[in-house]
Amino acid sequence: MSRLLTGLLAAALLFGGWSRVTALEPKREDGRLPTQPELPYFRYLPDAEPSGRVLVVPGLNSNKEFMQLFCAALADVGFDVYAIDVPGHGDSKVPFNAVMARQAVENAFKQIGPDIAIGHSMGGALLLDLAGQFPLRAMVLISPAPTPIPDAPLPRTLVTAGGFDIPAVNSFVSKSVSQMPGIEVLEFKWGAHSSAPLNPIQIREVVRWLGGDVERLRTGARMFSLGLMFAGGILLGLVLLPRRPKQRRDVLMPETGVILTYVAAFAIAIVVLHFVMVVRWVRLFTADYMVSFWFVAGIALVAFVTARKPAVERSTPRVVLTALAAAAYVIVVLGLFTGSHLIHMTLSSGRWWRFPIIAAASFPLFWFDEVAIRPFVSAWRTVTLGILTRLLLTAGIAMGILTLNRESGFFVLLTGMMLMFWITLWLATEIVSRHLQSPFAAAFFAALVQGWMFAAWFVTI
Image (cartoon, rainbow, N blue to C red; front, side, top):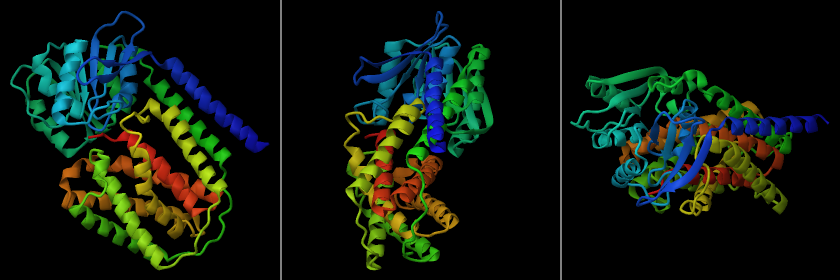
């Protein structure tokens, strides 16, 4: 009975939060600007006569979905807002390159005719490059990527940066942008490179600078409702797939051996990828290296564990189907239904084929996780080893990029986000592993979830 009540409470939180989020959303239109290439957009309409038209340009490896809270706040205070996907991002069907991105933003200016422009990271750099070509009432550059400053006079401009921003961005803002006449700089002590579109405090200050009535903002209420959705979705998943007492399995090697094996596999991946990027043909900007690293390190780990001749496991079709259902739940409920309010989660026609390839490339490393770490009976040992190996993985990828594969350097900007994702996935897989008691099925679950997320998130080239 208690499990039933918990499930009902979880469902109430999930759908109650969704109902509230829906009620708080401004009127929104989806479409594609008739440019060449077409530009996917969201348009947010205010309740009353618009006080201005705003063009919002996301950053590299970002998308219009990532700017939803920010754009909704602008609509709250009376702006007519367009957020676009530049080529390679979000729902765009064409590959990314910098020249095409600049042309796309220029085309958006011509089609929309905004009097205010807001850009984040790369979007800020593109706006700075184009600012002298179009009449603007105001411009906001959020953590703009360093770019040559035009000679033409700029409109009234606000530039924001965070205390935990990228050093190159902070240097650009403090040494170049802040020296220009008529530009205001707003620094957030606890801000990071991508925090402004999701931080109610930073959103409020930008809206205030634009002259909006901050008392009309509903950003906090939206974030609270999204929190309810996530809490309800996670709790419901725990009810549907409860943890069971861990069955004892043979420990493959001691903790020190596990760590040394991971380090050796990561070292092999760093060397191999210096000579050949094995899954470059997946064509994900920077993420090609990350997926290749997972695959090469995973193959090396499988070779190590095979040499020790572990017991062969047989997974029944029912167990594998349960793992598939668990992955589908995470993708659909926590991803498409809930997470899509914060980030792009769908697989458009140009992305779906990457999903099974990335999942297959991820499977070997996840399988080694299950046979080498998960058998430890102590939960603290398992969690500690899981987190430590995710730290080593992140450090290994970053080291390989910074030493031998600098062309993939953009990944360094994603290390914090990816580390949090991998730790979260590790903990979620622990629940699936406890329920199914099958290393193959648990690894299958983790590979499917990672495959979908990578295919949805990263820029295509």
